[in-house]
Amino acid sequence: GFDYDENNPYIAYRYTEWDAFITFTSDIKGYIPTSVKRFYPRFDLSFGGAAYVTEGGAAAGFYMSVGAGFDYRRFSFGAGYQMPVVGNAVVPMGYVKLGVRFGK
Image 1 (cartoon, helix red, strand yellow):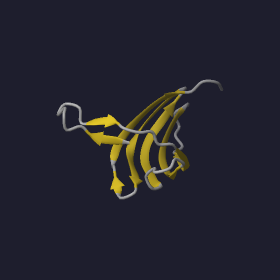
Image 2: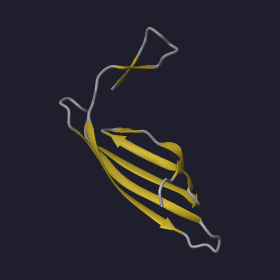
Image 3: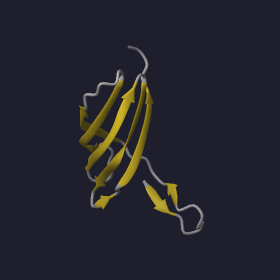
Image 4: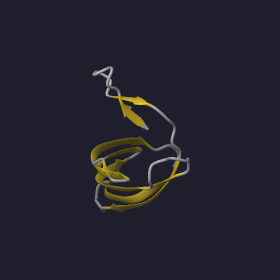
């Protein structure tokens, strides 16, 4: 976990302990057909959660992600919004994904 450091106003958080957890997700991608070869726009929707396996860990959490992106040849780009919930804390944030596919 993280803790606020009152002695140093420039470093807001410091690492205080280790937590271990197992995540599980369900990811749905809807590809939109186009006439352009090797260009595949898509919508992403993910749901999931996390269960802590260490003693004293936080409560199990929920995860949701919504986004859009495209694949072009071996490259992938996506952007969206994700909302992890752990206990009573909600941390909404945006994301950007860049990727390169290896193999076929």
